[in-house]
Length: 589
Image (cartoon, rainbow, N blue to C red; front, side):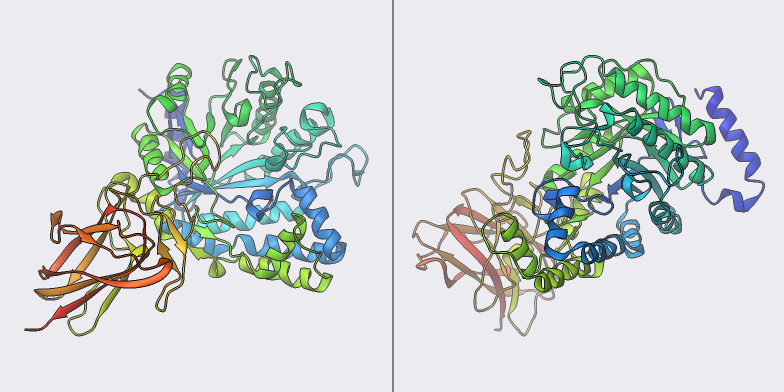
């Protein structure tokens, strides 16, 4: 049964909608354990965070450390003026309208914006322009304005997330740009006051913007209050009193100027420790938690579900990702089965387990080698050219798009169907080549089987689900490789019992000779071919080719294929070979 608050809001919206232009978007609100739209319908938020844009984290740039250290290293290479030029290009190129248009076309309905406070207001260590008054920087607000316009154009929701709070909100310095030489958020009243003022300023600016979905007021606080020396990240906190008091104060400041928007709060210990949470202080709150590298069992989220029921408040999975496609599909199926929205991390970085991959140029790799101590310092000219090329590579049109990652988040949680990764229409007159790495899109157990396909160790990088971490983000082990004919990638590290599925578009009934291009250093490898789950070849031995880069061609068999869609399974009976491609030749009578 809807409460009085919800009925009142819906009545107001109904009256407002008598003026059509006021109804182009409607505020999200809470109704018991659900997030609802202006029509009172439950909405499941499906989004991605724009990590790396307003706030750089070392790992996303294939280095280490918080942003202020990265900036210092870049300034050491380029000087201050060219460093500023690089950062201007970084902010301009990392997220553009095409990024948000693409997200919408892929099926996402929300965007989480990780903000760095320095884009909106200077650190407390700098003098304010007017004594006793907060100084504001229009750059950050204008960036949000522009992003909001792109979000509105796609009828999506924008969730504002303070990822780097004044002073830094946790000992994990990379995620908040915490500078250990200065007072943290928790050690400085001035930092806290600036954070409260920033949120009030944001709420005042966006109070009447229905496409603002919510205010996520503090990202992943991780600070021990009761015994900081022995509990740096606050995972053993039993009260979290300073955290709750600050979030209460921020909420009150928001409500002075904005009664419309959801306020999202987070617990300690990277968002997950809600010990000591007092009675909820606002009737339009959502609780957020973050989930990484653990199992996707019901038990893994049951604690948050119990809190949702006991507190009668919605739960939002505010950040997760950095895993395999199989983990993504399983996690989202778990979340949505339990009526929980989610936001992935991140849209793009220098890595393949996200929708967009930023490519590294050779010059930037030279810089990384210098920073790691394995190479000499590049010249200022070379470093500048390489960093500006990197900034250009941030643009979506220069990214590598990973459709398998998007498919794992949007389609696969709701379907076990497999789809062709590439167009596999066989030719009646010429040899058709299908690269081994272009197996079907689909879930583990449907499109492929691999011995290791996800990381549930609790640690980043705890299990290599894809030994080569190349081309695709499934459990299939893919490596870079070259042959006379190649798309640059091969399937490797094959093991007994693994298999790959390919959807074939067969134009005519007939007998097709099927050959495999492979490499191995043993005589023990073998495979079978199945068509529509029927064994068509029996065991086929693969002779020793002379090494994992010594490529050879083996006829696997002559199979009768019928016109239409057929499913070909390459089953690895004995592993230890690399696979480059499969060819099909229609035999004429």
